[in-house]
Length: 80
Image (cartoon, rainbow, N blue to C red; front, side, top):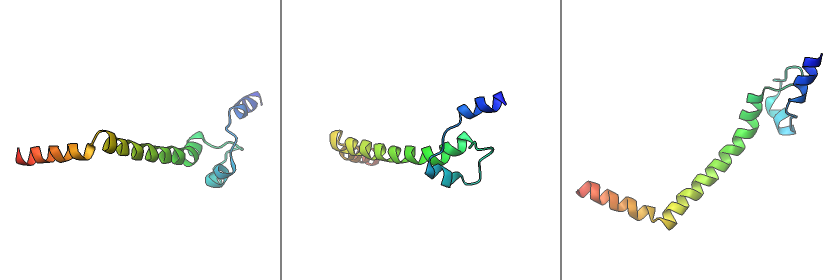
């Protein structure tokens, strides 16, 4: 009994979206952490990752003249 109570303290309370996504994966009211992470947290991480990558490419193009640099490399390598 004490083990069950101790384990329940560390369980992540599920949000409504997580309840819908995990469906019948509950085991005694506890959802596996991997399922919660993969279905709830990872989509948010991927969205932020996409935003950051887009901004990084934009910065490289604007502040570091990436397009001109790549063009110069292409000319140098092809006509080298």
